[in-house]
Image (cartoon, rainbow, N blue to C red; front, side, top):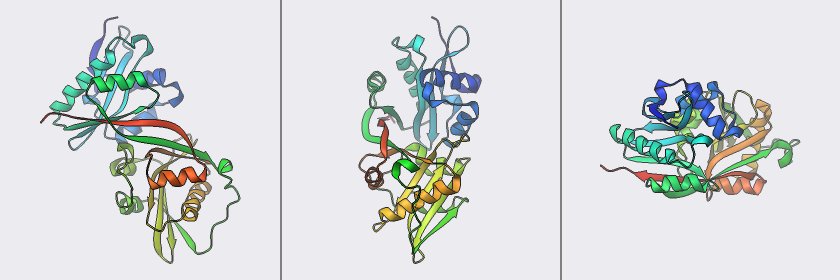
Length: 285
């Protein structure tokens, strides 16, 4: 079937959302949630290639975010009727050209560990594995925390201004955060708050969360730790965040598998619900 190539700024955003939901039906994207994501993660619609079929529906997309001289693909998707025909490769080629015109020097993306066909497309396009990122999830009842009491001597302070995120971001991470958990993304979240644990007036941990409009889950966007942070500190923060928001599912997305935060969550009993590869490509000067 003949295709027409354009960019995401020239088509209704709903067409992009429809394509994503066709390829990834479990995500349940809405126009409102996707527009918020585009804004939070610095996606440049004018640099994001889109292939349209004869009916005007999006047959394939490559949504490109840009920060300084770095680029990141939040979504690359090819509709089932157009898969295995080289469209993914062509979208990446066109995205490379857009990135070069924008003066970018690196491109990165994440792909599911079990999506071998997509990995082959990216590898053919010059991307190489950089690290493994895992997504963890748990419920209040699953963790056995429903009747958990606040420990004496520990103070929990809530912040809705973003100051706690600015203080903690990039200072206590074992590994660099993924694109969606870099500071510009965190500060652009619509529904967000942070909770800090203090012992004798000293900050010992910080938990920053956001949540979708449907309030189905509480996303951990930042888990800041110091050398002597304990499991009790983190558990108290998690319980405070769930109690105050009324949301009983916690999810930490795309955490480096070898980080201290990941180890702590696994010890709590969080399960891995997604396994991703982070991949990167350097562009010529």
